[in-house]
Image (tube, rainbow, N blue to C red; front, side, top):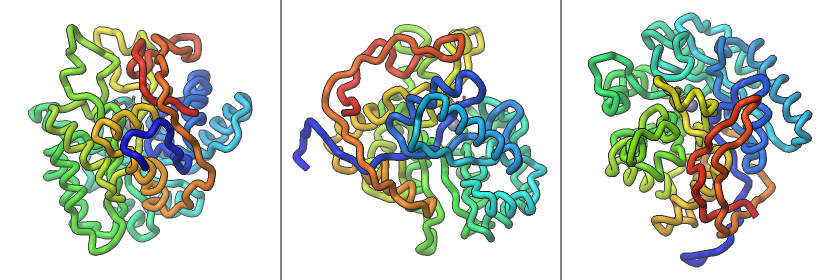
Length: 352
Ligand code: DOR
Ligand code: ZN
C-alpha cells in the first residue's frame, strides 16, 4: 500500500465493544453500526442489567426484530452478560452452551448503569473459575471506584489492585481490558506474559486515539467529549495510538459508542459516553493515517478481534475513500436527538 492512499479496502470490521440500549432508540443507533460492522459485542448495562442467559436471549430477539424492521441483513449481535456478586458458575456454563460471547465486569459505581456491578471481585471467584474452565472471556471496565483515587488515576490503579492479582489467580482466563486510556494499560497489555496463550487483549476507542483531555475543556465544557474512562493526557493518547497501530494482535477495535440523548449530556450532571457509531471507521482511519499506519488498520479492525474470540474472520470486504464527510450537528434518537462525536466537523474518510 502506498503511504497516502485515497481508497482502502478492508475485510469487513467488527465492533468489539458497543452500547445500543433498548426500545425505540436502539433502531436509530443500530443502522449506523450495521452500515460499517458485521458483528458487535453488545454491552449488557441496560436498566435492569442483562444478568442471565434468558435476559440476553430476550434482548437478542429485540435486537433482531429491530434489525428486521429497519431492513438490515448481515449484522450479528454478540451477546454478553453483566457479572454481579451473585453470578453462579452454573449461569456461566449455561451461557457457554447458549452462545453468549462474554461476561462484562463493571466495578460497582464505575459508570452508566453499573450500580448492580461487582462490589468485590473475590465474590465472583466461583463464576471466574467456571469462565476459565469453559473458555468464556471476561471483559473488564478497568477502573477502581474508591472516592480517594483521582479520576485520572483510576485505570492505572485498577491494574495494580485488581487486574494483576486477577491474572495471577486465573492465568488462563481470557480477559479483554476494555477501552484502555493510559500508557500504563497499553504497556501492561503489550508486555504481559501469557505463557504463549491468547489470554489478554485490549480494545481502544476512536476518541482515545484522537483526543486528549484538553478536548473536554476546549473553550468551555464539552459534554460530548466526556466518556468513561475519561480522556487522559497527550502522552497517553500517543501510547494508545502506538499500541493500536503496532500490529500487535492484542489490540483491537471497540468503539464504546454509547448513545445518550442530547439533553442527558448537556445537563448539570451529564452522562458519560461518546456517540461514535455514525462514522467510527472514518475516525479510526484518520487516527491511523495521522501516524502513517493505515496499513495496520485491517488487522486492528477486522482480524485480531475475531482471532481473540475464536470466531471466523468476516469474508466480505468494505472500502473507505478519502472523501471529506460532514458530521451532522444532531441525529435522530427515538423522540429526541443525539450529538455525534465531531458534530459539525468534517472527517477525511468515508465509507465508499
Ligand atoms: O462513557 C461511557 N459510557 N463509559 C462506559 O463505560 C459506559 C458507557 C455508557 O453505557 O453510557
Ligand atoms: Zn462501554
